[in-house]
Image 1 (cartoon, rainbow, N blue to C red):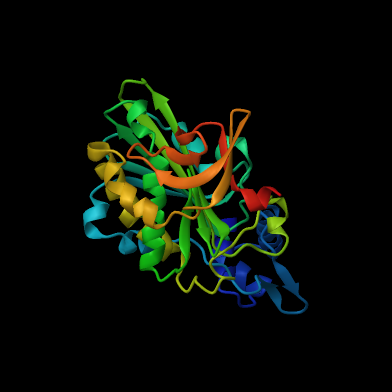
Image 2 (cartoon, helix red, strand yellow):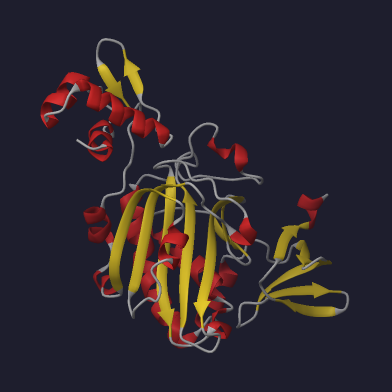
Length: 326
């Protein structure tokens, strides 16, 4: 019996005796104890109920490959090449980067936890076990990197619309790669590229979504945050959520390859979190103040200033409300 088998049994939240676990798998109770210790090293809280056995209080919503596949729309599934689920990994983006080059369909990597999850600008991404979605999609674009300027925005629209179909309200997008729920960060997007600038180009799209962060896990998050369950909007399994995300993401990548960001612009503007609000942009050490005026057809941020409307492109750029900077 592996630690994975023990985890699958304890995930129901019930108390399971060491004797029963050992008997069902033909192992010693000492071997079961060692497997439980392995789970605890992953950050899983396993309670030892005196005289009764082991329990994961409240249970765990583990990812299930078949349930994910069942939740993917039939048309979208034609774009799926392979689906990997890891119990623990350094990062899903890093794992897919090790597997380049990609083919003409998507490679998908998921993990229950990450030891080195990253967000944009090299920031760490808090990744506790079975508490969020850690998802990466690998895709090869025939065109070069220059056509991908608005990709993270199109992905944001796809994620926002997937959440909307699951009944999640009050979703908004912050340029260039954050997803907000009720004004707080719910999810982030990280796009990484490799290959020839003029094409073909291998792209890894990483997405992290807070589902139900455990107590204390958010101490490393340096901004107001939200998760689905505590917001009362997560009445679905993580597997269903992943299936719905892929139902939107895979066609989005195929569409983006053909048409770029332009078809996504109006939908992005409809979810713009900062539209018409005073903002500050830090652009490679240069600070600009103005009013957020949407994005152009290439995905550049439009900033209305006293000198006119300026176009701000991605890179080492941060955007925040002026009121939050005071």
